[in-house]
Image 1 (spheres, helix red, strand yellow):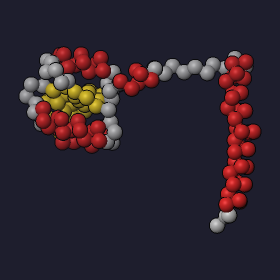
Image 2 (cartoon, helix red, strand yellow):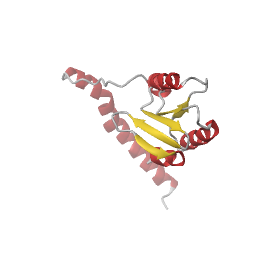
Image 3 (tube, one colour):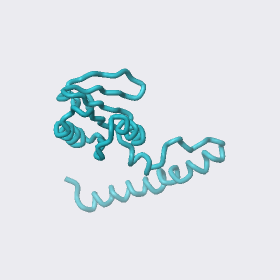
Image 4 (cartoon, helix red, strand yellow):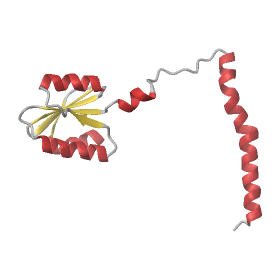
Length: 138
């Protein structure tokens, strides 16, 4: 077990390395990249836009039992997936419009016991309602 003075000596060497070797590289990278003509901008949306985007949006048909979908929604959220559904009682068309406005990349259309999963750029996938969480988190 290292003594206290040996631990402080090690900590001093690590800090010295950080301030004399790593810090100048971090501070000088951006000005040097601009000087050499390298672009350092990226086409990311703002943090506010990313924070409000929904990954999965549930659209319910009239015959759907809302309670079952709320349980599925809660399971997805517990798994760390950003998911939402319409709480205003909109029509199917209105829910689809809301899904588009939310920025969701995946829309789950729930019909009775089953669900159709529509992903951006992918084919529709028909799954049982109790398999939605496993399918979306796989």
